[in-house]
Image (cartoon, rainbow, N blue to C red; front, side, top):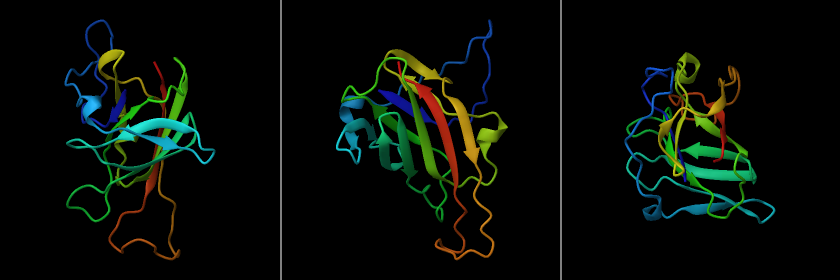
Length: 171
């Protein structure tokens, strides 16, 4: 099982220049009701869940076995804001090989000052390597388009939406 979340802790280093590992384990995946994404070609892909405290994944689409587009539920007590994420992704169908790179793109991030541009990045938890690790790479934040003069499809006080993408090497 693979987990991803944001964390307010900067990328600190322990003695010996080893990445800081967070020890607080995520929920047991067997209790989450994982549901595999099915591509337009009918092939089942990674399974996703956010059916746990703090989970906020609303929807996942997998055009290919190594590319996933995610939509998040809005943060509680906000008008359309989505600035953090926490979800589980698992290869229940055996579609990934060890070492294969998977790309995740969140399509509706709305943090006004993106923390990902300030040195923060996604962290992951893998069953094969317990502990939270900063092993996501190619983190890319795409700011919202300048939509001045464009028709408004969102509520007037809803934030413009940006994208956040990162890669992860399956292990």
